[in-house]
Length: 237
Image 1 (cartoon, rainbow, N blue to C red):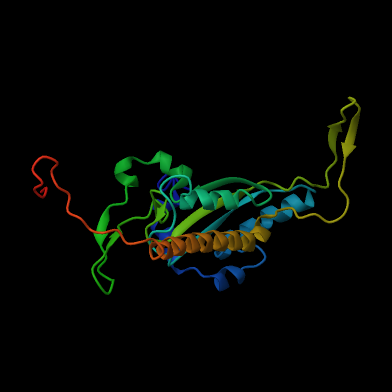
Image 2 (image 1 turned 90 degrees about the horizontal axis):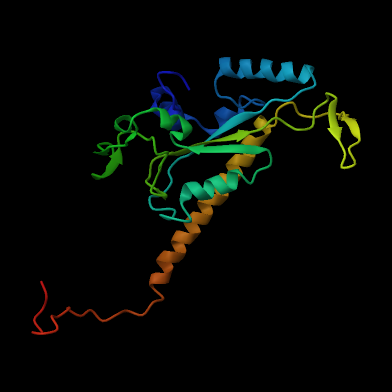
């Protein structure tokens, strides 16, 4: 985030990146998995600094889901972003989740944050799309066909090599000092986990939608009748 773009959703460079990035590119930057050389080098130096100090540091993972069908999710309890948040926050070490403009969206006015509808001129047949994507591909809990993107925050690993004070239930003070090898940052390792959990959520939503469509064929057809006025029996207009 920058003063000009408090939310990545208002940054044209970020929006272009999420439409072109692919898994192979991300994996080519292993082990950091940040698809930008300069940023990846800075992250590596920061992690190495904390490792050398026998400490740990947290980070965030940004996930992009493209080509999601329109209509997945629910308008209330099973909102698609709620199911994604549920899945992401079920991953160990997670401490935060934001979709679309996220917390940065609180710092822009509604006139900037709204996603106005426009006609998609690139589609084979005329259809509506949104000019911007601050919603992160989900509106009213339901996918709108745009790319879904969100961020997951991971806390610093609790197990570190530094000696830390502790106290027992009996009031006796002690010292905790982990031995052995421990990751100074778990965030790079979380990338495939976030991807897998996202896939499970989208597939679950697809299966739910498929079940709804199939259930229509199981229900008996109701006779189509024209409503009438109780007094006259004349068809209502």
